[in-house]
Structure formats: C-alpha cells, structure tokens
Image: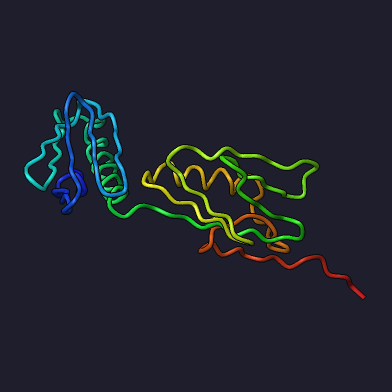
Length: 178
C-alpha cells in the first residue's frame, strides 16, 4: 500500500484541477500544467481534494499510485508557488550570460557552449550565479542538471558548476617529499 497515494491531495485556493479522458490539468496563478495519466489509477476530484486509487491490485498499479500522487502534488505546488534552482560557477575564465533564448557558457574549452533555454523556464544570469525558475519541477531540475553536467566541480580546486547548496569535498593534492 502506498503511504503517499492513500493521503488526500489538498487543492489550495486559487488553484483548479480538472481530470478527463486520462489527462489531468492543473491551473493556478503562475500558469497551467497538463499530464497524461495511465488508466491503471482512478483519479477522483471532490471539491478541493483529489483522491487516487489503484484500479487493480498489481505491482505496476501500486507503483504508479504513489508516483502519480507525487506528480500531482508537484503540479499543484508549481502552479501556486513555482520552483527554482541556483547554480554557482567557479574557476578562472569561467562565465555565463543569457543571450536571447540561449545561455552562452565559457568553460575553458576551445569554443563557447550555447544551450537553448526550454519554453516555460526563466533564467537570470548574474556574475557567478545562475537562477533557473519555472512551474514544472521536472523541467527545471532536468535543465539545471544538464547545465551542471557540462563542467562538474572537480575535487582538487573546486572549479566547475555546482548547485548553491552543494558541498564539494576537497582532496589533498600531491605532496613533495623533501
């Protein structure tokens, strides 16, 4: 039994949810999110609560029960509050800036790296930090991870791109024996 799936999902004031033909739509002050749901889970909207129940007692439907519950909670929080991540860049000559609908990264390579910003994501570049925000938690997280993967922080000097709350464990370098 899913602990998350059994709990009712509260819909806050100012947020509306609609479920029809396997498609869940959540609309709030920040925007609207849609998600297709498989028919293995029964979704019921009663006033300001959403209830989920598995259609059959199979391993797959029990797994989807908690997963869909988390997705719906994230959708409701996204359209009401939004999500944001912050990246930091460290290293001599490493920099970034937003040019139109792209992020221009200079990471010590022979060429600058251009990454297109997906629709629904807002990016603000400051000197050493990059603020990424949006209403879709999955989209914001994937885009942030994609940028970080271009130059992960290395353990000797700490250079690279890291999350603002990430702690880079430093290693001791080579020692000379004299």
